[in-house]
Length: 168
Image 1: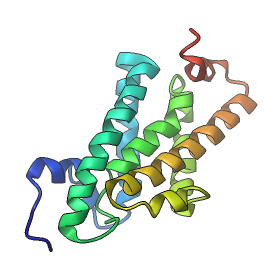
Image 2 (image 1 turned 90 degrees about the vertical axis):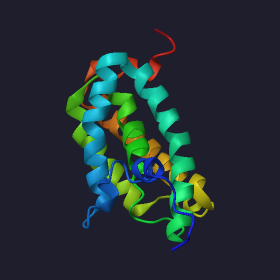
Image 3 (image 1 turned 120 degrees about the vertical axis):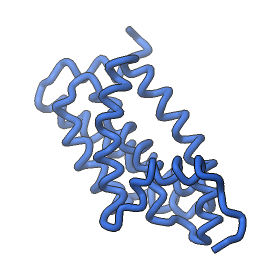
């Protein structure tokens, strides 16, 4: 390990409060942990607060995951899970007004994050914290689109206005 150990806050952020240190499927556990936070953010500030939080966590994630990855001398350590929070929230954003679709968004996000369809795999190859975060952003976009398609197909009207927040 690198001698330049990041401070406790950096480690806490990169591992999402230590969730990344869970020995089995830390990415899945982080995605599950992201769900109640998405509910709280949406309850207090609607899609705006959830959107702003995604952007903030994205930039915090680039910084903290870069420092942590350099310290452990790995390109994308499994213990970094702040990217799962960002991607999972992005998957939920189009249907954030209807919590019934959170489970669908979770499942589709995990599938997209594991399979890494194009261009997610390419994004993962970008070095440092940017690559760590971008592949989950990409998976979150895929999951959000497919979740919205399912919600639309099922005819749930409540989910659609969150997609058009700028027109309200």
